[in-house]
Length: 301
Image (cartoon, rainbow, N blue to C red; front, side, top):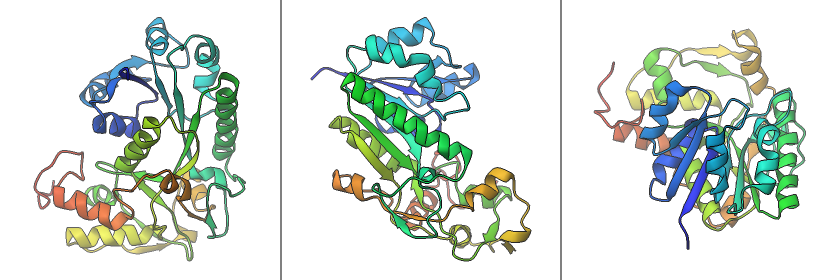
């Protein structure tokens, strides 16, 4: 089998985690909107390219030989930026293309009053950004049908991992324990995004997959658990009603559901971190919770 060439539109936190975990998979290109991020992409094993909504000749050249396309760019008022810029290129100028992945969000399900939802559940998004995600998912699925290529939609829950977790927030003093009775969220470690993506990519498997952990939990419980690992007192509880929150942060609490990962497990994927406790235990023990670089877990800055 010929070597894979993977192209990631929007090689941010999840894209870099995927590239680091699969450096031997073949050539990996990835885009960013800022040239100052090129070095971070290179360190993750990504050949960096600039994408600001317009295809450059360099992007076109890379896409021509791409076998697997991963899209991790949020839609905006004008639609999906990648489709707007590259739909015709994907349809007519990517002869090697075998498979497309679109990284979406469990926000597309909207509010289900704390009930369980799986991939068969109705999408009833509440926020404008989630409504745009539903439209983008449909656009990518339609493109896949039009060109006869499988499209995998990965609906991700709250992303965390080294450098982005409650341990970091406690360490820098930004952690809060907001209390909204009955509120739960699912989460997903970046290593499991990378693992699920690679699992689907290997078989060129299309479909809709919730990539999320097994244990939806109140957000304050995660902070309390992290504080216990660090041996410090957790921050005081704050009632949700009186908390100072941005409109976006408040909107997250307007959606309450427990998200099941039925389809990705049925596809044969086994989670490395099926719950936040196992993930935090590992990050703390390895000492890589700040930024991915292992160091003494007792060293505090």
